Image (cartoon, rainbow, N blue to C red; front, side, top):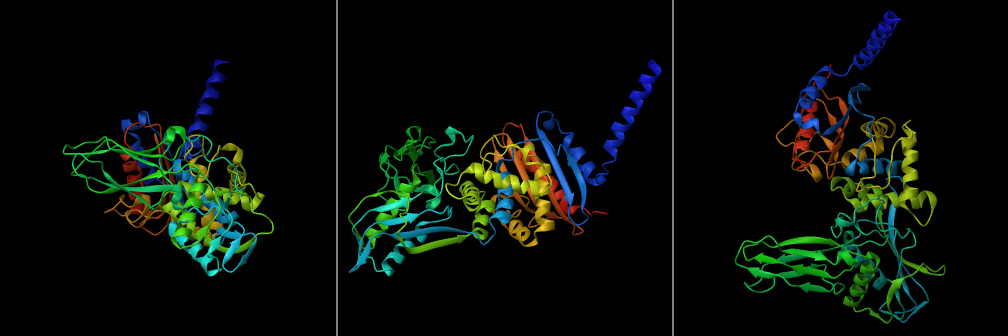
Amino acid sequence: MGSRYFQLVILLTFFFYSSIFSQNYNEDILNEISEILEDEYFNSTTIALSIFDLTANEVLYNKDEKKLLHPASNMKVITSVAALEYLDPEYTFNTSAYHTGIIMDSICYGDIIIVGGFDPDFTTKDLDTLVYSLIDYGIKEIRGNIYGDVSNMDSLFWGNGWMWDDDPYPDFPYMTPLIINDVSIEIAYAPGLIGNPAHYELIPQTNYFDVTNNSITTREDTSNFEISRDWLHRGNELVISGDLSYKTEPDTVKINVVNPEYYFLYLFKEKLEENSIEIIGRIDTLTLPEYSKLIYTHSRKFSEVIVNLNKDSDNLSSEMTLRAMSFENYGKPASAEKGIQVIDSMISRTGLNFEDYKIVDGSGVSHYNLVSTELMIELLKYMYYRSSENYKILHDSFPIAGVDGTLENRMRRTKAFENVHAKTGTLSGVSTLSGYLKSANDHDITFSIFFQNYIGSSRVVRRYQDRICKFLSELVIK
């Protein structure tokens, strides 16, 4: 009995170790990663890593590739891939102006309705174009109301699991299909005379906000100057407080805006008045009446939106893309939940099971998201092998090491410079990097690196990410 038990243990041990060594990982990579993992930093920090040779169609290295971790903004890679396949690069985000009633002698005897179509990059400059379109249409006076139609989307203004204390930062936008200026207000500030309040200016200039300026310009170097919003009560009142040294250089801050559709409409009304278009009525929201007539549509292609989405890791762009997928595939009102169903379909295309992951938003802001480096690699492989045109759009939308976006200041003066095209991701205790690069002998490589459960600065894990990318860029694959 004891002898047979001993033989069984030996047999199981043999199969266990043979399964490990049968992976045949690239020996150079294995040695490099093993050296990295010897650092005591990884006694408490989790790392999952997948590296795949696209040219040779073979796995180069895997570590905990199935482990579920938070993707942070690597979630945008998943959203981008699904959108390229299910929306198409030519899909347009439309912001349209309509009128009701009749136009006679340059007077609109009816309402103006602006229909939001999820355009995350609509700006004040685009609003100017929209106003000029009304003038070209022959409207000089509006004897009716100005409405915004936000019915293309549900009423959930934040994602599942977004944190209340991230308000009022612009990276956590209040969502609406009727967007302007990243649904935020920019405030420029500079010291005033000593003993007097700091100077400030709203960009764009508008009367939409009530501003309380309790700040003081001082001789001392201080650090308690703050510009915020009444976020605790979800109000749009801006508050400038604290001491500002007279030596402080002029700067700007951005604050997100509550009920951003009304912000859009107020700016629209101000622009109309600036152009001598008289308005009799009020501003409000309304679903577009069936008998309305189209005046103008401002369109933006997804192939343009994806650049800002990934280069600058724009949360609003990714969330509006998620809702555009919902709208295009399931109709109105669009929702994150239905957009995620489209992502599930994309995951199924790779041969993986979407039920093995938890996805709750399109941007990666939520700590509820749980995915693996295996999933990231399979999606990046799918783009490379099965969708060459979309692969190029995705590849070119990623930040370039040492050049632009969120990688602008990383990997300079290394072989990874201008070589690595990859999406970053950062949350508290989370740092991720996934994308493409070329080895020293021109093999196309895709990789995904997830770090999690660390405290302190993310600079440490970024150095490890950069080291891996530099190593892969110098690697000659035999």
